[in-house]
Image (cartoon, rainbow, N blue to C red; front, side, top):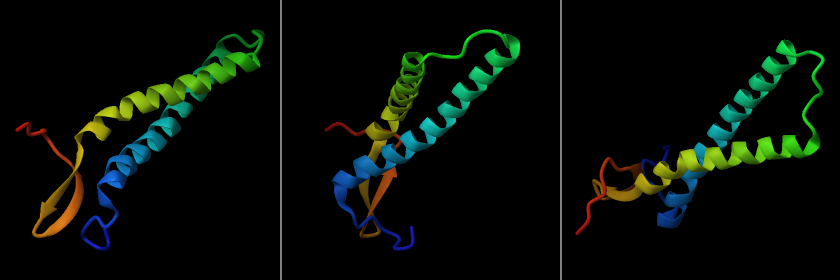
Length: 97
């Protein structure tokens, strides 16, 4: 943003935006999973906690859902030249020639 153009090339353009989105989604979905766990703990205080394998599965599920949620960002992010400067932006439509 400081340079007003994208100096890192097209490959990083397609990697950085989805990676940022995945990080945000993982954080949000982890909070949802924690809230769900706390909800169950309050509702059923005598019920045993998650086993290690179940916790690993929840973590895996959070990451998979976050990656799947970020796929549209990876698809619609592209390099465009605006006023002679390359920019990495999300395009609203993909033009097929």
